[in-house]
Length: 388
Ligand SMILES: Cc1cc2nc3c(=O)[nH]c(=O)nc-3n(C[C@H](O)[C@H](O)[C@H](O)COP(=O)(O)OP(=O)(O)OC[C@H]3O[C@@H](n4cnc5c(N)ncnc54)[C@H](O)[C@@H]3O)c2cc1C
Image (cartoon, rainbow, N blue to C red; front, side, top):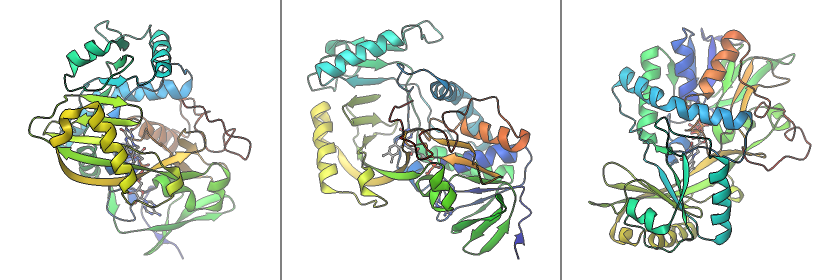
């Protein structure tokens, strides 16, 4: 027999997605139980860099619109969290400089600048601009390598994701979410195509509304989830450095390597992207050496930084790089909220809104055609590799 959980909604997973969804649902007066296999906020959401950047401006469509809307909502989202919990998530629009290492990247960057020409900041400045290397060095004097040019994205922001997770957890507690940690969900309980609850390590739990936010592990919970679009891990390795006077103030990127200056002298260095590593989270000598060499070529002054920590996280990746948000066909009552790949932090203000709409009103005004489970390319037909 199922134990009556008294929950109107069960949320599976305590990463940025599960916590932000649980908070929003509880703020709408629903009784929410969040089940987390380990401790909340210790997986991909913790490992992440905290860059809040617009998607590629060459691509338009519903996902790009949602991506941009979520970024626009960030200042209010961060302020609301601080007001509720007293925790400052260190949101700041610091801009991002991408050094173009090849002529091809430089030309592509110029076409991105043209495509984004209409986009302006509220005070009328271009969102995206191509700087000369000298102009880039005026902004970030620590740059030490050569480049064809430097793509400057004025609206890119940073947050301290570890603080964001603490704030979301606290906000959940204050809103009355029952958080059960060390509680692994082993499967979904389904009868006649309807979700009736979940099977957890401590026994079954009843609820006909379940939000699945278990990151890279999400599609392991029911065979149907593999059919509507699998999610798989894409390992990202990162290093944390520290210096009294860091030689950068914002975000500098070149190829796949980026450095982010934190407020307290820490510098985040990321990241690899290794889908072939599966669920293995080991830091490897190869990735560390590649990241370090690339970082020191870019900003030589970081050579004397202390290495504070290194780690890997598992980004929840899908075949077409788009998240799975929405009802799951064939599993009535289940709402997917996973597969955010490199954008889980970016979508933190928006994914919960969509999930709330679906749970409370049964519908949403957002166009989910490109992220709904079972969409074209996720149903056995050839997936599109195009990004947003
Ligand atoms: C190196 C790196 C850099 C990144 N940088 C950025 C960035 O700058 N900006 C950005 O937006 N995104 C970034 N990302 C991606 C971002 O981290 C993810 O998109 C986001 O964290 C996904 O959040 P999540 O809650 O879905 O997953 P997770 O944070 O992985 O959380 C899932 C949770 O579900 C739990 N869980 C799993 N299975 C079960 C189960 N059976 N029962 C109960 N609980 C379960 C897990 O323990 C985990 O706590 C980065 C990722 C990495 C690795």
